[in-house]
Image 1 (cartoon, rainbow, N blue to C red):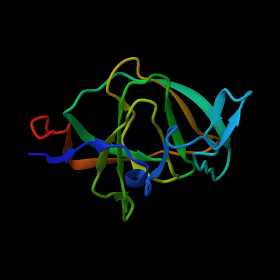
Image 2 (image 1 turned 90 degrees about the horizontal axis):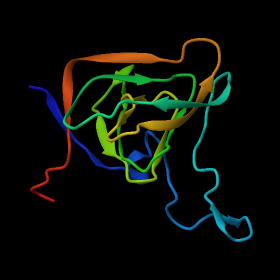
Image 3 (image 1 turned 180 degrees about the vertical axis):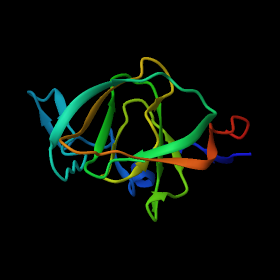
Image 4 (image 1 turned 60 degrees about the horizontal axis):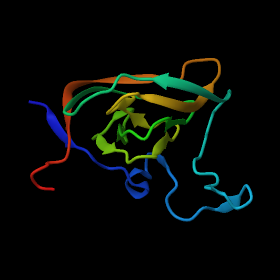
Length: 167
């Protein structure tokens, strides 16, 4: 039997060891555009060893819970931000580093309007939208050389949703 992980709501505090939550919580830092737009300024730490920041578009197939987690990846040369282009939730799975491999994974589900920025070198699951269209803008490192490490678990995890009977 697989070890089980229960998803939890994505919060800035819970996600802080792994990266930044990108959302418009709290008051805007600046009001711009003749008072009609709030600017939530500098919400993510983008870090690249070499290369430059680029914006790519990803279109991923929706997944469903429960979900088997058999692999995690990380990007040692740069951070990676995922900005959903819809208000649908997506699954965010991260793990601390344990001697070059992922430690105990933690699973979050986003609220409408939330994105994430994985810090450089953070173990994370693959992009897993929970509904269509699965369209994301991704800001990450564009440059020469490899920037992907994958780890396959000998014993996969099973990621489950909240216990509906308890909540």
